[in-house]
Amino acid sequence: MLIKQAAFTTSILLFFLVSCGESPKKNNSKAEETVVKTDSIPEEEEEVVEEEKEEAFVLNEENAIDFFFSYAKEEKANKVKLTTSMGSFTIQLYDNVPYHRANFIYLTRKGYFDNTQFHRVVKDFIIQGGNSDDRETSKKRRLIGRYLLPPDAKKGHKHHRGTISMPSSERNNPHKLASPYEFFIVVTKPGSYHLDGSYTPFGKVIQGMDVVDAINNVPVGDGDWPWQNIYILKAEVL
Image (tube, rainbow, N blue to C red; front, side):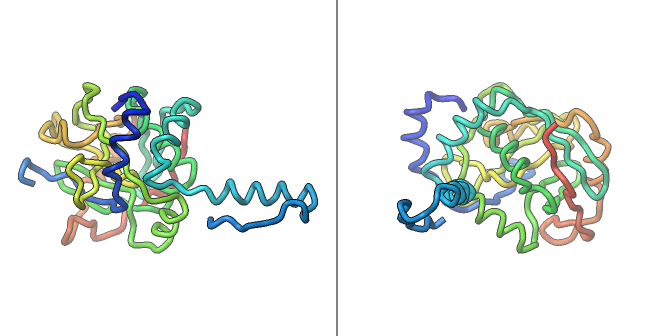
């Protein structure tokens, strides 16, 4: 992905949309700020107001790239453990896909993934997580913000088995901007290489692939949604 920030920000933000959620196909066809007069507020109350403003920060199509550019420099963590209702596994994120790594770490630290689900399971292909039919998930998205990420599929990473990658938004999105709240993990042996170039691999499972396989084998209904909900109970940065 890494294009020089200034040129990249100018070009890619023109295509930012506010939708999330297309899944990869199995084949090629397929705060408000309150206005306050600070001279009327004691110093200690001014500090509270400032804290509230910080908490009200929301990502959008105009600030997301700059935010994650800075966040990627400051945040060096690259491992996340996902504890699910079927067991736990650990993901290592690639350092040379900085926006996607920073996004995943940021959402993990914000608690976004907690109590979301693996909502799409395609046997011998992928498991996809980060969404839910719970209203709390929609609420968390509103509080964090509505934004997309630029694709970064030219760093040499392929969709090998165990790769974690990011689906693209489905609406009017010729540049394959990525849906930041969701992810999928490849279970195909040795991989699903027809996805290369269309989606951004940003990490891999380094421990607990047996849990990923177990999730991939659950019965599913229409839309590949598991009959029995599979929850991400907790996501934590290691």
